[in-house]
Figure 1 (cartoon, helix red, strand yellow):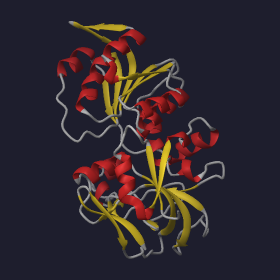
Figure 2 (cartoon, one colour):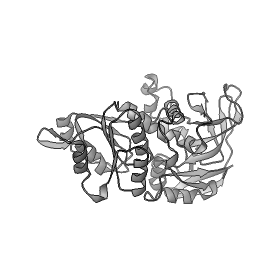
Figure 3 (tube, one colour):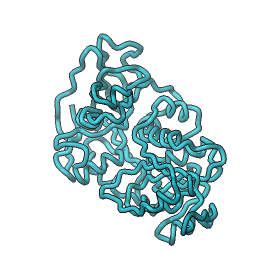
Figure 4 (cartoon, rainbow, N blue to C red):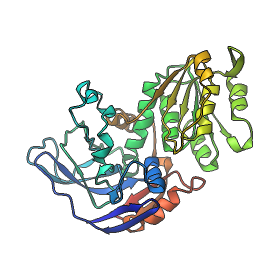
Length: 350
């Protein structure tokens, strides 16, 4: 089969590779769409998270091509999405059923260690319907279906941050994860959701997808804008923003620092962005504001499928470009252009 292979940082090529063999518990899927994730971009730019020779891609939809003899509930031709999570089952995290914390997770998962979906076919190992592979209703088209995984990151982040009716929310970074946080926060009942970015395209899409107001951080002081919109919140020796919840989805040191400024005392900061360099922070703000600070990784596919099917969230406006698999290098180049793209899709069947 054909696959886009990361040869080294900044170099991806399309070549022939072995089509995956499946065992009795596995499912082989013919990929129709696969989105380029922000973590794929980190890997492409820097080599983070993967080794040379990796076939990346984990935001996919496709049709079942082969089914292992012990797999139940699926038929050839079914339209599905999924993610093979390669936790070890033996470490303390696995024994506590905190599988997302297994240290081996990214060595053995779809697009990380295991071959991903920038290819004609992708395999789901130890397939469990409703667990790591999911049937899709006809109401979710292939464009939306290929964004279930990234939208699930926002859905889970909002649930983890316990966004409640009437909360005031700030989202820093309006890529697809930030946009998912915006939509999920509005669906959870947030009274005001503010979005900050430097990309006019992403800010426009944030507004279209439910943000109550947007701010281009190139135009001034984002903290002062948040204070002007949500009010000032005094804390020991200083004054900051009055956001109940701040989602840091940009993954840059500045916005991580700003999240500590914008959150109210006793509020919540949820970090979902992946910085490529460490962020220096003023920990006195943590001491004096006493915010709850959480990281959020992974997502709930079942809840996200339900929200997309019901119309509570809609990822379709976020798909801005589509490329054939043969043009994967050009697709990555386009995804790097944040001012021009949101979600770039690679379509092996195109």
